[in-house]
Image (cartoon, rainbow over all chains, first blue to last red):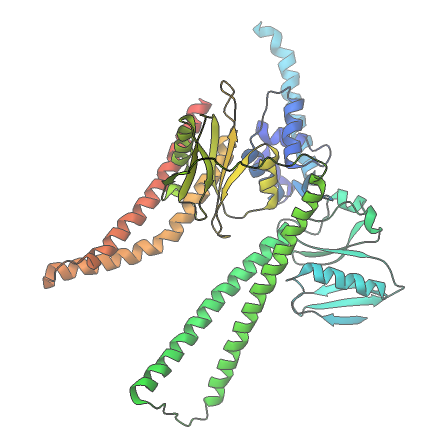
Amino acid sequence: MNADKVMKKYIPMTETAYYILLSLTEPRHGYGIVKHVEEISGGRLRLGSGTVYGTLTKMQKDGVITVFADEERKTLYEITDLGKQLILAEIGRLKELHQNAVKYEGDFL
Amino acid sequence: MKKAIKPFWSYDVEQTENWLKGMASQGYILKKLKRASRTFYFEQATPQNLSYRISFDRNQGPVLASSLTENGWEIAAASGKWQILKNSYSEKDIKTAPVRQGIITHNRNVSFVFFGLLFYLLGVLLANVSTLASSWFQDGTIAVEPSPLWAITYLFLALTFGAIGLASYSIVKIKKSNQAMLQEKAAAAAEKQKHHQPTPKIPQPSGDFVKKVKLGWMYAPDRLESWLEKMEQQGYQLHHVGTIGTVFYFVKGEPRCMSYHAEYMSTVESSYFSIYEDAGWLKIFESWSAMEKWVIWSREYREGEEKPRIYTEGSSHLKRARRMASLYTILFLPMLFIYALNANREFQEFMHEGTTLSLFGVLPAIAFVLFLSFIYRMWAYYIRLRKHYSVLNS
């Protein structure tokens, strides 16, 4: 899938997809992703195994992530260059949301 | 440049990898693979100690995960979705590998095609043999007409036997190597497990099993889940499920809070099981068939705790349910059509010719209604699920 198509398909990202991709700062196992997301969201997000597996499979198909095996032959997930492009674009969008949130927050108080 | 032809190189990739390693140690380094002619091209160089890994990736082009590149892997040859990777690191320094799953799935699909071919050819052969046999039994002789075209007949017969041999060989070979690849993973996991505590074994019950038969639960998996959960609340603990998934064996004990989940998988990957199992789900049933795989998962939770769920987002759950319902619908439609035709014929005969309606005559009609109800129940399940998530989100 080319970059434009991927951007169109994923942005704006669901919270699940965003946190899964954000957790791939280093290659992780499937359950490693679940634990990491729970940690960085302060225990708020506990992703279900089926949801994570389904999202990872979809992302792999679209070339956003790739896989390899470790010594135990367990699958590790790694972000691709296309995936990095995607998460940076989404982070840019979220920054805009955040800036405007800070800027206009006071008007509603 | 040295050439070598390996017609069945992709069936047992481990063997091929070892062969490539052996060639490299003799100074023949793989340069190119031509899949159509199954030819490997080698360049002569100084002997090297190289490790090879073959991978099949239906998703991406020949781009390696950077963890693989950093660990010394590079592409030696690529053709279509196949890649042959090489690594000059010593074996103890190679910590990564491409995944085997792509090859396992691809080869399994190849063997399904050969299964189809085998059934077809054996069917044709059997039909011919039975014609011959019946004429032998009737007259006691088989008249052979002289014809210049007999050569073609024999050629076809030889081709048929050749194809049967090829199909059988492929099926057996693929089955063996796939099993070996799956065990390779299990062995690696077991090696690691030595340092961890072993997984708890389900204790054998002291009393007798309470047996319950549940047919056709695949068409409404959510109903099965709530039935199992209700049984657990009454103290009927699910111990195991029969091989074909119709008999449920319970043990009478303490009531438990359990979360059950039954789901259909079209392709089963080992990473699927490890994500679920690592998260604490226990696989209580896995259907035997490789083509339609049903898995039942269970997980205990404490009272007052939130019930653990496999899907925390509607879209992935709904997508899976929709795929299951569509697949079974496509599978059942031709049967519906055939049963409808037969039922109609029986009915016409009954109306016009006044023949008595036998049990045999009503069978197609019963089968038609049954298959229609399966399709209805699956889509009803999908709609229930959609409602469930729309209530949850609003």
